[in-house]
Each structure stands twice: as structure tokens, then as C-alpha cells.
Image 1 (cartoon, helix red, strand yellow):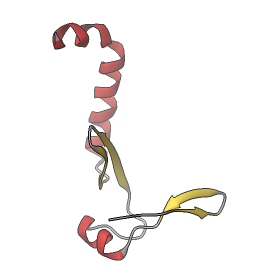
Image 2 (spheres, rainbow, N blue to C red):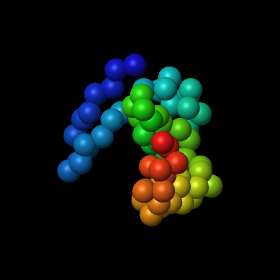
Image 3 (cartoon, rainbow, N blue to C red):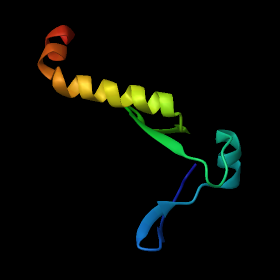
Length: 73
């Protein structure tokens, strides 16, 4: 699905088509979570528990970068 970036006030945004909103099971006012994957960006329904887990994982990856590099060998 091709989406276009448009001006919204002083910002830029993407308008999500109605059928995509239906597939995501979200509506006006709901929040989405953007996950960066090796293949690109994945949009999912915002889950506060997942967001907290991702924050912890990112902090561990920053703090233990050299250890993780050694484990990857």
C-alpha cells in the first residue's frame, strides 16, 4: 500500500486509508506503535506493556553493547 506524506498544520503526517485502519482495528484517537525491523517499519496497535519492555530492552542494549557484541561472536 502506497502512502503519501502530507502537511498537517506545521508538521508532516501520513493519512491512513480507512481499510488499513480497519485491518489494524484502530480508529480516530487510538495510538499506534512503530517498530523498526530489518525489513522496515512495522505499525502495530499501541500496547503500553510492550512499549515498557522495548524501553528496557533498548536500555540494556545501550548499556551492555560490548557484552552483546561478544555474545554474538
